[in-house]
Length: 421
Image 1 (cartoon, helix red, strand yellow):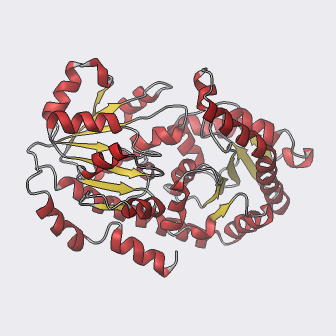
Image 2: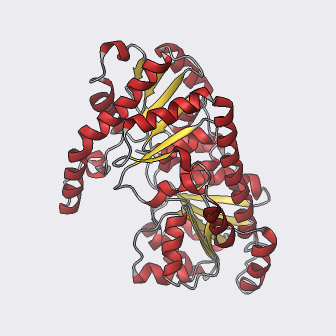
Image 3: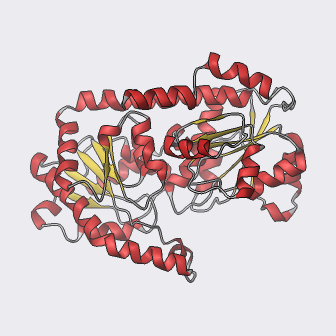
């Protein structure tokens, strides 16, 4: 990270406790509500372990730094084993599954009893309508934690101006947000809440590693990605015209993107004779990994490569990631899960992705950040092999980045605490 970047983050992102919390006290003096209950809106979808990770990460962060608070999770999606996983890992958290339009008793009770509402990480302000309902109904404070921004409508601009805080998960989004001159009193940087994830299934992961013959500490994880996720395919509906255009972009880049990531796999195997796991973050990536990465590999390389043929939950995935040597992929959330377990990880960002990739630079991993369209596979491979050859240093770099994130988590949770007494 450059000195200018460090200065930017220090000055306008999260600051120090002394510089940040004293002004906050004055700003929120008339907005504090009694009670120890906080309502969390999260769980945008379950076809992506990263979106699942938003929820599990934020709950872990809040339980760690706000142990005196009672957490109420208002979850949007909870299939694919998410609900029992929540019950297992967060038995103290009350879970509400009602929809906003249901006028349900449990949601009414949460609105009455909770003193604050927090919006979990996401690609944008996903729960804008829910926050508006909370604000209009209760007049209580709310905050938005760790999101990216691309465009802000007048309606969203007005909503954010009423927020107690707005934390962007990347500084490019924060720069854009600050250019809007919004009246939100606290505007800062807080990396994606998935960094807080501490969910594992070691039994299932160990069984899988043994079954497919992956040696612990001797394989890398590689995850493929299309330029745009075709969510319309995943839910079985007809695409809009905009979605058709995005799908065409994905198809136009699919071959070249696959070839570039495949060349990294080949270089790794040839240089080290170690293994590779091709695995998914999103459901469609199971087949994409087979089509674009595994099947076209030369036979002498393929013998060192495992293609995972099924989707998985964040618990099994994280338990596998922590046994990897390193990770290379376009999906930042699996990278986040790996870094949270001190696994060095290279982010290859596609041009059509959101500003969230900037996080890698923001937390001090800029040397492991590459642009797909501008970087030859040889440069990515060289960095991967450098990590491998200087592994102790790479892990120190990873830990330093993660410690930096944890410090921000601690600071921002103290901000949350100021609104609840």
